[in-house]
Image 1 (tube, rainbow, N blue to C red):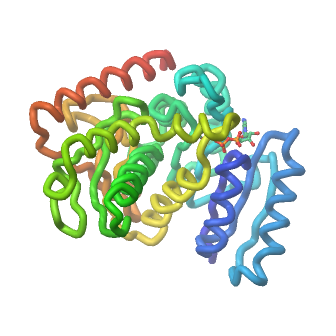
Image 2: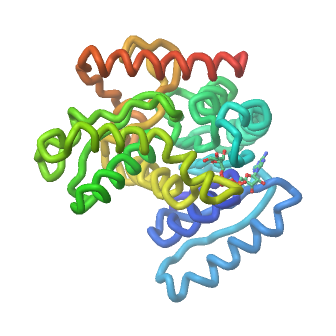
Length: 310
Ligand code: APR
């Protein structure tokens, strides 16, 4: 029997998620949106069914606004919410998206209580925390998609600056999904060569800054709405690691219970994702400077999560 992927939110990211999940034959797909957008969700699903003959995939893809249709989903990816507009911080979104996450949590809890859930909606650190609290799901079953994207951006910018294949750039980004996230140049390599040995400090600092502001850079270019290709791919990579028990080690927003000195908050940390969901959080010994940066991002995450009052 095919696996089932439920996409809550059929907007920009949701539709790319649906296309990628179909092309990669991850399973049957449900695109769920609000009742006013049920027809566009159905239309996108039908369009993808009609793409299948040339896309070479088999999947049943439907659009709906009824949570009954997500029953028994193996994976739920949540993008439901309002996207960030130019001039808006992720925190400005908090109040409006918190309400939406509440409705989503109810639906998922009722109809897909065993699903591996990935939250994408911003402000991410607060939304994934809220979803976890509202569903009462185990921490292994709930992750936020942020670090995977932040790390993709970090790797992309390094490859662009150095003129090397992005495939050979390995590294990680810790902390919250905001401007004080912590890319780790010390632990970044290009084909095994330490980044610091092939890039100047000035260049590395410039790439760190660009990574921290990468979401905003796209928002400014779009004028309306936020990034969608790269967030969708990042969530797909996480979902696939779960569905195929790949045990990839990906930076993700996970509930920390003592790791990195953090207790009870979701924060970007290196996670092993396999058939049991979040199977392990890896702790890295940080330098004093890295730790100081981490403390700053922890402060921001605490503040945003505090605003949820959950
Ligand atoms: N239930 C289901 N879907 C909802 C709900 C809800 N309660 N409320 C809103 N939606 C839908 C919207 O109707 C819309 O189709 O969520 C979709 C969001 O899509 P977009 O507005 O296109 O936003 P997108 O670019 O996909 O980003 C989604 O991810 O990266 C974050 O900041 C981004 O929070 C935003 C989210």
